[in-house]
Image 1: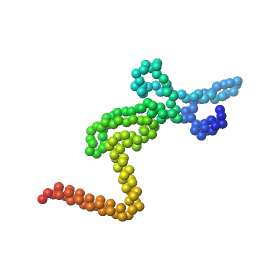
Image 2: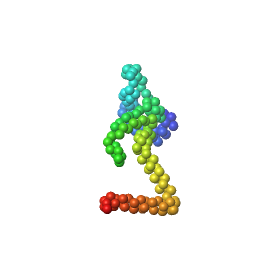
Image 3: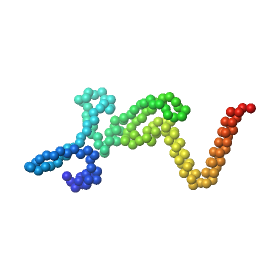
Length: 162
């Protein structure tokens, strides 16, 4: 084993280490077995018979390339948890890398969630602008107070028609 490999093993040891004791010439030695995992599945919906299919080697370095080549996707009907959108909504998700599984990436693929995410970013931007601009902050507070007063008048007029 090269020096570089030894350094890497110390810095990032494998997560699973399977060893067994063996006696060689009267001395006990530990032998490590490599961990090899094979996942077999019909992920590509390929029409070829099983014998004609090829294994794909996947590791941490080529994982995103393999995913891009496979074009995994899923289409679902999910219950809507959004206000004003009761019932089920159709969701179509595609994945080209591990990053596509993050909540933000998934939200960007669902139109109502993408709109909410963009609104959230705009509100965050507005908050950062108002933090440094007192005049803008005061004006926004005035607008909110006047809007709340208008809403209160509307509610009162609906509850007490004359």
